[in-house]
Image (cartoon, rainbow, N blue to C red; front, side, top):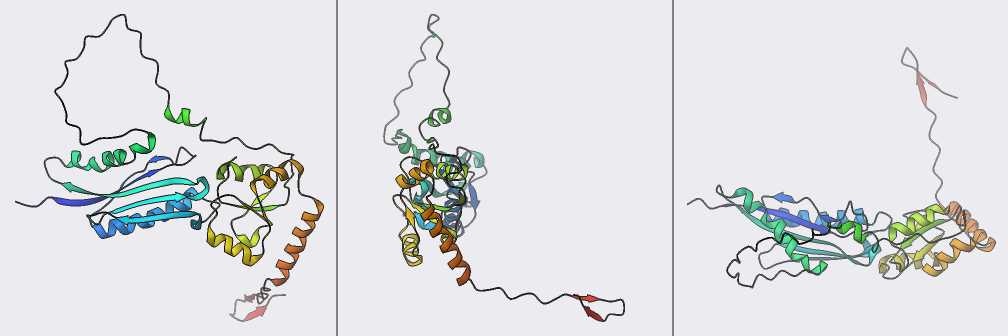
Length: 287
């Protein structure tokens, strides 16, 4: 008897405030276990970058594990939301001629059960199935069931956080960088708020005027901030800046820091003048 062919499916579940990114992702299929495990680790890093476009990977905790069968089981926790952002598993799929399509569905079903506990639903495989009950006759006088409400619509009122209020252009010309998690706003809201009130949101610590530091900031980033002697503000101070603006003394320090940074930056040597080619092939230096 010919042994059944085995494939390996990477199944991923993402939690995010952007509902276009959230949910069960399209699986990736590999014909080699080691290749699937390696691809899963790389995929986890790419998801960290995608879910935190204005931060870095240091804000996440990566849990890369293997189960008893040597299959990848991973979790991505932390980042701008301060909670589990990604669950990822590699499942072995046994293919055969009789039920190839049905067997291929199992990793997705298993993934749903594996993360059902996060949404308050438990799946107990140990319960024994009893005898099927006879269907009850419909009650003609029964009222129609209410329409189902979308889960996404219900979550939109609880997960999303409103944008803080402030004075127009209160952050004009200020370069900000956010790190860690915040109680009054998520990362998407904080970036949108800063831009709305005139700030430039940057990604490099070297380019920032102020770093807005929340809880669970990455230790590596905090170390670099101390080495560069960057100015930091708390979440409460950032909200105060939205209302009151940035004082003249702070703007003067910002200008002095930018001038010092420009002086320390190595000067780029000028490019040599281009040589124009003539019809005879001789070069004539352009003025």
